[in-house]
Image (cartoon, rainbow, N blue to C red; front, side, top):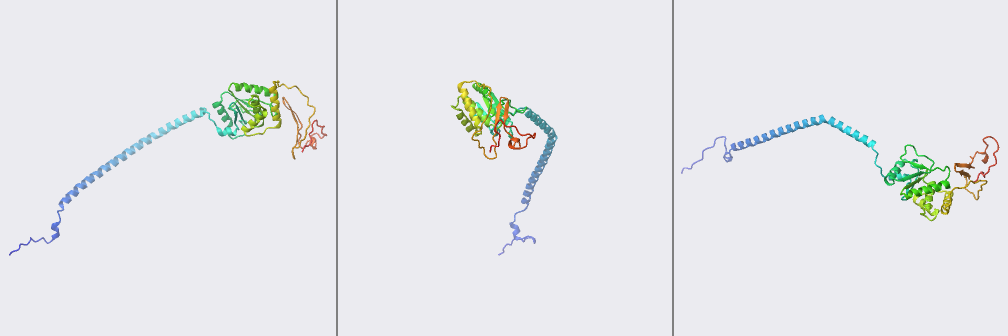
Length: 322
C-alpha cells in the first residue's frame, strides 16, 4: 500500500513556520497607527508654537503700556494723599489719651481733667477737642492752672486766675458758680481743670456740686468727687473753704469781703517732723502779699545777711520749726 508523504519543506523552513500567521497584515496595521500619532504630534507642536507667539505678543503689549499705567497710578495716589492731608480727619473717642488726661465725668454735664497741654506724650488736647465735638457741642473749658494754652491749641479755654491760692476768692467763686449753673441749665457741659487735675479741680468741682444742691454738705460732695476721680490730694484749707462757701451760699450773703488788717498770726501745735519748715503766706486779690519763707542761709536761720547787717525782727514767727 502506498502511503502518501507530504511535500518536502524548503531547506530554510521548519515545521513551526507553518503555524505562524503572515506578518504582512501586522505591517499594514502598524504603518496606519504611526501616521496618526505623527499627525497629532505635529498639531501639538503647531499649537504650542502659536501659544508661545501669543504670549510673547501679550507680554510686549503689557510691557509697552505698563509705564503709562504706573504713571497714572502714581498721579492718582498723589492726588489722594494731598486730599487726605488737606481734609480734616473725622473726630473719634481716643480713650487712651483721655485716660492719660485723667478725664472723669462727675455728672453728664461736669467733666474734670488735668491740663490738656501738660507733659503727657499722648495727644490729650486733640482727644479732648474730639470728645467735645462729638458729644458736647455746647461746652466751656475753665483753665484754673495759670498755665495758658499754646496759640495752636484746638481748644479755647476761659482762664480763671487766682495766683498762689488753692481756691478762687469768694467773690470770683460766686461769679463762677452762677455762670456754671446758667450754662448747665442750657444743657451745656462744664470742663474744669488745673495743672494736675487734683487740688483746685477737686475743690472747685465739689463746690459746684454742692452749690447745685446735689449733695447735702460740701463734705459729701468732696467725697463723691474724690471717689470718682480716684484721687484725694486736697488741702485742709480747701475743705474749710468749701464749708465757708456753702454757708455763704445757704445764707444768701453776697461774697464781697470787706478789707481786713492782719496784725498777727499764731501757730499752734505745729510738729511737721524732721527736716520740714513751717511758713506763712498771705494773699490778696492780686496774689501773694506776704510770705515768711526764708532760705536756709538767710539771716532768719542764722546765716549771714545779704547786706551784712543784722536781720530785722520778723513780724511773724519764722524760726526753724522742726
